Length: 413
Image 1: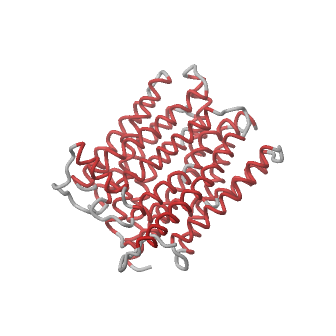
Image 2: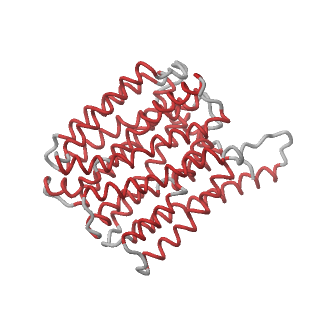
Image 3: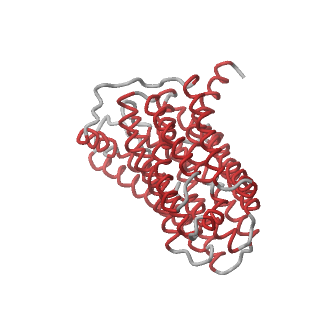
């Protein structure tokens, strides 16, 4: 491996670590849901609201960081956000009520989302357009390690030390990432004083991003399709620990196994992009997940699965998940350079906002079966495929109707 390749993977590792902060924050405390509910004298459904609060916070926070990253450069807002995250994590460890935990999780999300937005914007800054999908695939590979490690570690920490120490560990990990980012991460695009932070100017900037048809189609498609894991996250603790009686440690290993499905497909995505375009790959992945999602729902509805076959079918379903996300991200950000920070923030905000909505839907339709979880997972793939198909059809139809000569379309039929 050449020095250039080593440097490439080192930067990817740092960016992946930044983007991993929020997945760790979501996954690591999941095995502690029953313990948190017991100690704070509340229900698991109420504890699930702390997850929803985190997703809402991270969705709103990204909209704030987008303009800040374009105005002040990539690193200064990143440092502030990570500092807020560390303080809020410590606050989570010392909460004594469920309402306080929900609030602290919201603050934690506002800080932690700086890592996601900065990582996505820096990929657009540091790599050429034809390499961004591969870069996002490698970052997704780093992120995918999180659900393999986080719930397992969280289960052991909760069982032996208490759920509060999960948040202490999260604070320590983020402090380490902050130090490494300060000394080794490239600056990326510098500050741009011409970017206004006035509400009207910010709204106009976001509107210009949304008007881009390629961004709109792939952001909406990717946001909904990528929300399927959030349905699993919201419902899996209840399904596997309460319904099937798995322990915290066993639940962590199940979570790790299903995460491995996404890691494998991410690696596959890196390979198939050498022969196929991102547009072709994402379309196939959504067809695949739609088909497997329908089988999964049917099996649960007709009581065809036990705990082992349910896990196996979910594993097969999630094999398509690591393909959809990186390609949707790369395609949605491809048209932008100057507004890459705002575009990545808007995409990330929608993606996490969709995840928050999906997790809330699973909680609302909770009925002591796995059906709400798997139905919502399948629905994400189905709706994503419909939006992608209709969006591309509309764009290409308008292009043919106008007969614009010499216009180069980014979106391919």
